[in-house]
Length: 312
Image (cartoon, rainbow, N blue to C red):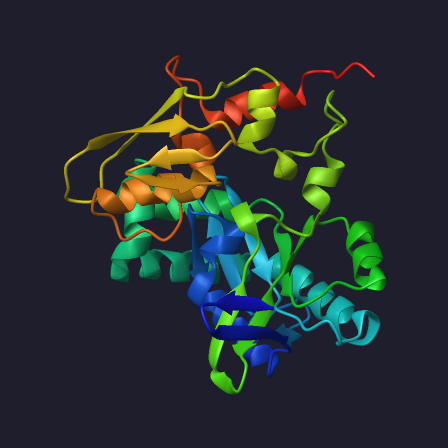
């Protein structure tokens, strides 16, 4: 249950898969990351012409990854519904005509949507290179992205058998008690999947006591990679705006103070800065945005922590 003053929100099932799909479209960056953009449903076909329609396609131009998106409800059968549906989508995604279609849709969105265009500009990708950049990403294997309201054991086991990488995110719906039209959705913090076979397949880090998604600023303080009172810095220039530099302070509990506010997440702290600069961006990766006085990013410090063997 969530409580806001006198208002109570209780956990509730999604009305339909379509409701979940729309929530993802409206909030895709909180799953696929701040350098991603989202292409809606499009029919694609296998080599023998069998049609299938993924719920969407997310392309992350910063991480150079792309996702076949399949929104699901936990009560749907893995074996009769999810597995055969995703199998067709994977086969269809490998067809040259599918990749040409997605490149064309991506270029069209770049041309017509300033929000998408800003993401390319932030990465210094000129208009003339957009088609090539997207095409190169689509030549890699897709990640199967499954936002879902809960994960069964069979779904976990099936995901781990696939040749393709799978990420499962759990989304939760809450409705106001006695006012079901007032709805709140809970998303994972810092884009964290509940299951990520891409991370599981990577070589094990030296520090086996903690996983990348679990690292917090307090862990960096405990490892003496950061200290309480230390300053962090970030610069940002919004589209058609002036570049600004922001200074934040690390507090004793691992939170970050900027612009008179305290944030437990580096990404929310960074978002406060870029929106103060005039951007309408909804997300930002604070781990790569914030740097210490030696110009070392939080992401690099996190890697140092993960690659430091802990004595037992």
